[in-house]
Amino acid sequence: MNQLMSIELKKNNLRPYVFSAIGITIAMAVFLFMFALLPRILKDSSLDMFTNYKGIVLTVSVMEMCAFSILSAVMYSHFVIEEYN
Image (cartoon, rainbow, N blue to C red; front, side):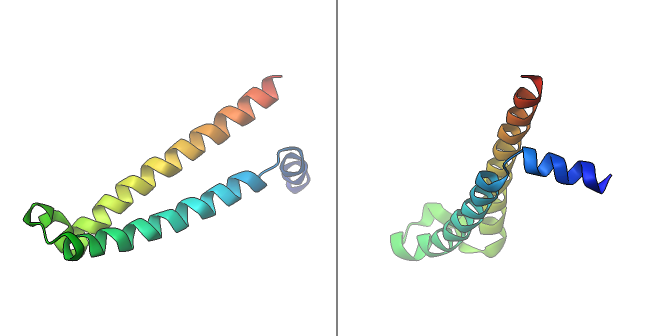
């Protein structure tokens, strides 16, 4: 079984997807800090959601879930189409 998995990993190049996942993680960390600093920079009362960490983490986790679900859909479709051909 391990041999079959290693053959599949060699056949499918996963390097771009690993780099994409690392890029998404870094981008989400930047968004986390940006949303934390947003109310201080703009001094706007309409940004009450970003004044506590619960709102910030909720927003960033929703964005992260969307980004990783799109990445997994792209990976799945690429693997299925490549196997079908």
